[in-house]
Image 1 (cartoon, rainbow, N blue to C red):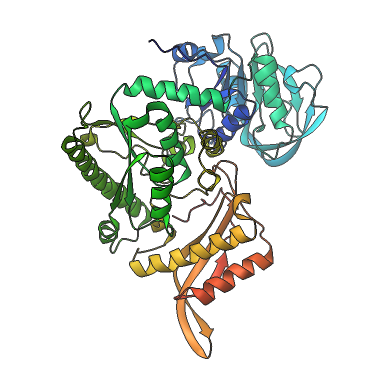
Image 2 (cartoon, rainbow, N blue to C red):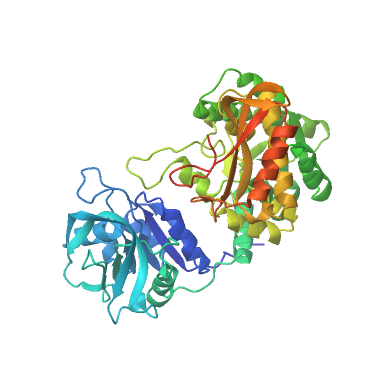
Length: 531
């Protein structure tokens, strides 16, 4: 029986010019229940046309349009008849390519400002005459291209918003996607619905149906293996694949010795006993710790863990094949497909797809880190989703709240929460401290109210006093942040009583610690994890 093709959705394409807010634009549009997709800035116009978007957004970016290496777009995009919204650098690029003028501004606009809106612009329909905005730019448009008019101005710029309604081309010198532009979401809604004519047809139910159809089409009757970690991403991927292909899925759970307390018990219980997914458990803790001996560099740690994981995974897959052969369930040969719980932010943080040149912030061992000799084809059914969307999918697939709303945990585990060398003793200290943080956050009803709350072990020893004795012990830093999708984050203003309780318990109960600090830095400029 032929599977019906999934219905075509309204779609907004976002060309990424390297802005730290590109992902936020995508989030805001998806919040309107409209599908958004991020593509490279240099995508050819004919490829854009083939994707049939209802609208195009040009993101901001750190470059100046006149820089020799500034990312440029295919100017034919402006002639496709598809509405285009340029934001910040995107607006400047639009003006530059269509015959306007962009100049360096002596007065750089960064931060809060006031926008004065002119009458008649569809983009600002229902917004009012003045709105608070947030800007971040050094250049500005000083002369509009032919056919454009000014739709709004600020104290510093006569052309803070420009438009050519006939060609459906729009530009904003500020960032409507950020929270600091309170009415910004309404501006994006006006573009998405009134100007582009999108329908609200991006729902989690439709995504799951289409994801299952895509997986079935990709893998056919072949077998799929998934590295299950117990985190939200791999757990939802496992549940989705179970729904899509049933017994064709086998999960491998590798205990790398860098897990949270009692993680291996929970994973085996939920997925083996409750979901009845075939699960192979591999205890490789000693292997990983030996490979990490003497290593202090964060990126080297990640690469070693990724490399060792591949070795363990290969060996486990070979053992599965032998088991299949022994019990006569070989089916259609080997495991040709490897499933991963890769998310949108994983991809973006590993390599900035729009930056020029691209800059690696930190590597994720589940993104692009597999050697070709593994001969696996990747299945990444949730690659299009942000973390909160993955949680929605998990609930719809019937996963328990304890897994769906678990806080994110890094692929390399506790290794990147220990600054410096990873040793069994340091792991014990961090695991004990982290268990206290989690239990106190849960007891105070704060665990599910924050994005992440965890302990970090610093390679710093300081003098303390316990009883009548002088101590010289480690320092634990508490990292507790709020965020929507992990792309930006702010530290949480926890009640002092809760902080005091966590600190007291860690110092009193965790041998080897005599000091607790609280990390009050935001992302950006800091990352959420310390390594």
